[in-house]
Amino acid sequence: MARMYMFDMVHRLLGDQEEVARAYLREARSPESLLDAFHECLFLIEEISGKEMAAKVATRLLEMVPEEMIRPLSCRTDLERQR
Image (cartoon, rainbow, N blue to C red; front, top):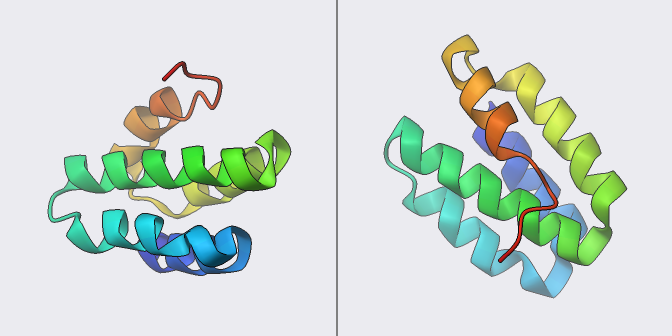
């Protein structure tokens, strides 16, 4: 359910840039790679739609992931990371 939510959000929020995010989500084959994909998608959402929107998506996403993914995802959703 969380993956489908993120597919929907990247479609709505990223417009022409959605294909990169969709590729991250499609290629995720393990829980760890799915966490990486969510993180990259949130970073793209922040770049394009702003920090507030990315925080809203991250909050909703945390409500959908399995309990064992909550802590790792919440630790990795610091949207002010440096690249």
